[in-house]
Image (tube, rainbow, N blue to C red; front, side, top):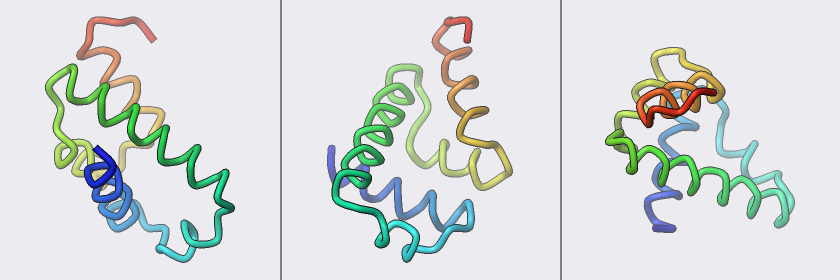
Amino acid sequence: MYNDVEHSRRETCRATGPDLDSFESLTVAERRILERALAKIVVLGEQVGVSIDQMILLLGSGLTVGELLEYLADRGGHVS
């Protein structure tokens, strides 16, 4: 799972613009929080049939993280 999250983080950074220096400047606690959040998004995506690669494409096409979460919730039949 961690490798998927790390891959997702790196690809998301490439797709959405921030460079890896932004991630590298985070504190250890901030990194753990970010990694847990990404892991939860990956799991949610898997549960509703959206792969990491598809999420990266959505983010790269201009969707915000909030919009991605709404999309995943809608696919899961939840009201956000």
